[in-house]
Length: 200
Image (cartoon, rainbow, N blue to C red):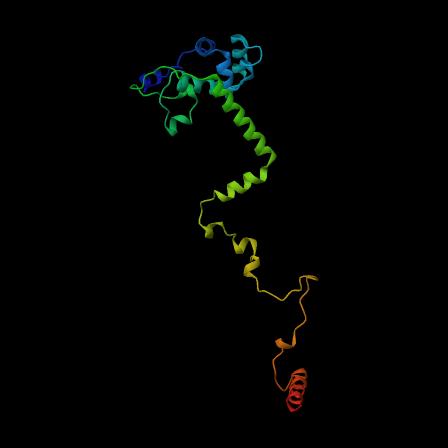
């Protein structure tokens, strides 16, 4: 366990030495495009970058991840190790650092511009994101239906009634809706009228 822990390239490495090593190899432009840190963009210096990274834990961890898996080019960790901070990760003894990954500045800038544009589009059209989330729902249809006990019956489950679309009131019954029998005066009147029509 201890040997695996000591196999982590970050073990015992000071932040200033880490930043210096990365700046010497990649330069501030590549680091700014790859990590999108203002300390590498605006008046970059190793001293200023170290000051910012000491105060900002998420940025420091992002830089340490870059150091392990881009500069030292180690294989990606498993899910359990990925949850740990980079300095606490256990690197198996058989995994050794490889040649650093080389970046193309133009490709990094294009990728950064694309991400910025996608973020603007998401902010401009939040409804499309909601539709995409609903369409990506892989649950069966029965699981997506609302619970009747919790939300009540849906429109298609309720009994239908005749509605006038203009007034939204139930319509008056028609003569065709009335059953023809002797107890109904309208039915008997219709019967008499029909008989007269036949005689004429």
